Length: 526
Image (cartoon, rainbow, N blue to C red):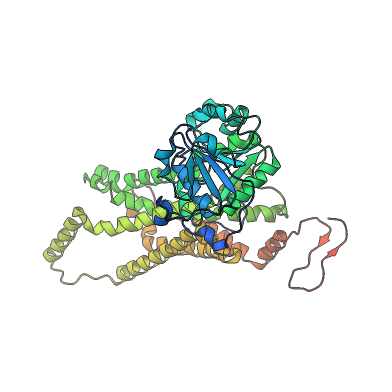
């Protein structure tokens, strides 16, 4: 969930599941020629099917003129890589310590042989074995001379901290006559099997030889991925650290959500549980698992949603105050802008949980007892008809606004998914995330106001002199809505539009709005 202010995060790499297989019992080779280009849609098709995993000849043999590629390793990743390469037009040969045992695990189009035979003809060889097995490949040093070795391995977190050099640099030190390229380590075996259409397409590539990186990049492109040149082999350690990161962009938003939940939960506990126990001696501790949680979740969701759009308001205010868009935002604001998507998704998560908890409220045994007690009291009071028109309308409007707010928030969450966001152009994405997001914030505010109604003005609602919880949650969202309303004023909206089109306060550039057809007049160099 994002607004028009800059700072969107790029996609995170897919966490790989490198099952490099056994010890150095496999290897193969490949040519550095790019295969015949496939149709664009073919790269999006899943590769795993019965015909691909059947090793009895149901997958046709690769044409003899196809570029040859080698793989050292017969684990899960090596099998998935071989399948993807074959379906991308390459001829694949796999070197194994025990080719008879490993041959049945690969498609019939893949040649599985001994290591020495596998590395003889290909020019590009994928090394899909673990770091501790690299040294056992040194017996193939003469045969590997001049070839391109593609390191696809990943260290564990402990290995990454223990070793100063990356796996790729260590492999290059063992084979100085070869050209080592680091690639495909952020792609999981599942992504190779099912196709990159729903996963991450980016493949970081790093190496010291530009020609070798070009060859590997062309292979990645032919397999349906998007190669990214990360520079020399010295950056391999950073590339290998990418799969070790566990949701790096979610740490701060998650801590923020947990902090808000703890604060609001403690506040509601004091008001709804502790106050009746201290003042009236009533035991309301049964409310802790469901009722108090359900009261806390909408507070967290509402505040988090407002925090999605507050940094955009602050960024616009800074641009108006500075009179330029070319001045860098403070680091804290820049990081805040980059975490808006995660904050918005957490807001949707809390709102969805609130909806589920609300559906569960009538199922509680305590709720049934309360209904029975209310009915008994009504009979004893000889009240045959209990109907408060104002309360009926309030609840109807309250529930309707809540459903609309949750529905709009669901739309924002869905369009935050990469597969959906990539199908939208910028105007469509901006409309959903910015305009509909602001509508969701307004609907949530109206939902909260109809819930509170006149309770903020009732003295009995201030327990331990603490105001009702909903009054606290209204503070930040109301500030955001009022600020956005101010930015709609012509005097501010026009100035902000000019700033975002490049106008600067105090410059000698005379800016003419785009509605006027007169050219922009420059009186000095800008």
